[in-house]
Image (cartoon, rainbow, N blue to C red; front, side, top):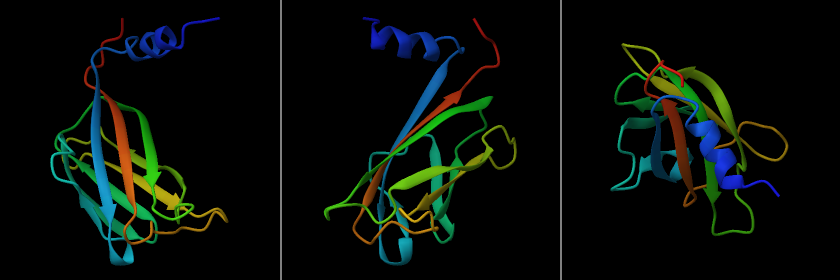
Length: 132
């Protein structure tokens, strides 16, 4: 059986200097996001732009976006918006580096996470354009 750790590391280290940015976001009324204290290093802010759509402003530009993983945390049986995906990637912008993500409900309708829910973000970016 192949080693899953090797496979993950093999992908990650095929890029020069991948950097992971982690943050926990809590959602309030009307989907208002707040970055939880002591998380979000390398992230300037997160703002709601429309139903279920959030713009994550980065502290500085990177050479590319490798992945975004979002895990919803809900005290109810299921999160209000369990589907999430990347809408746009401007992580390479020298003036306003950002990533826009969208949350949807199970009917594929744009939906804000419910008040009191949280989400864990793992954003993997490429720091260098050099490849091994």
